[in-house]
Image (tube, rainbow, N blue to C red; front, top):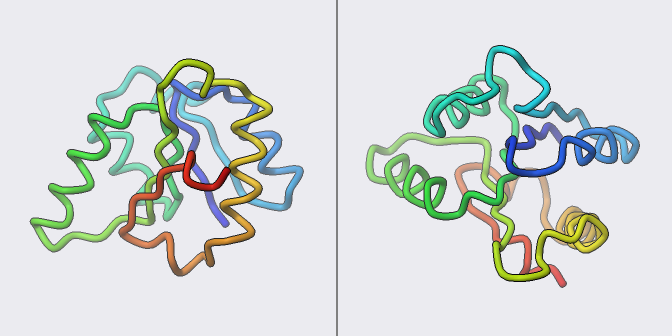
Length: 119
């Protein structure tokens, strides 16, 4: 699978995903995307056919709904919860592994997945 890790998620996730055999890139490590607006980030993910992984639930839930309303597709969005303790990198990795085992690549297309549901 192909992933784009938003800059609010540790860029280390990029390297772990690559170790797991996926193609991954990180917004914060790219001069063309760092500090860009969320709609620009999602457009880049669409252009590159990468599933976006983010902690920014509010903005990307809204952008997901805008895409649906406009009949536009995207490669998928994975939202990580912001609640206390959910930013643990070990927990993030465990949930990512669980999600990747449970969700087929085709099921990511134009969908929004909440990572905490893969505990």
